[in-house]
Image 1 (cartoon, rainbow, N blue to C red):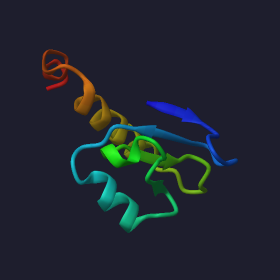
Image 2 (cartoon, rainbow, N blue to C red):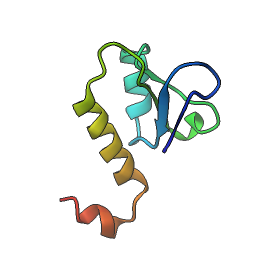
Image 3 (tube, helix red, strand yellow):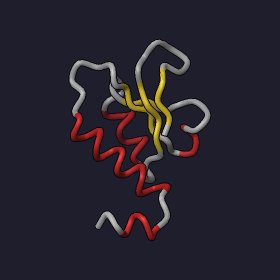
Image 4 (cartoon, helix red, strand yellow):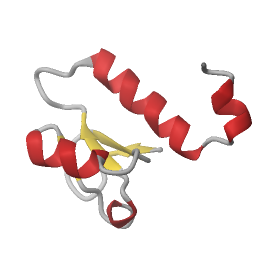
Length: 80
């Protein structure tokens, strides 16, 4: 996971995403989500945090999904 004002003055973070999630979220809400440089081609998701209507419950789900994508199975099993 990466968070910063990278490449512009927007506050955002990048994270791993389940297969197909990046395309779906970016196409349905491009003001909230983006394909980050460098890692976007591998399915990572960019999430803007400087929008007026940040849904922190959704952010929590995105972060949890990102962890499930990259963490070892032994650790993700502890979440269930």
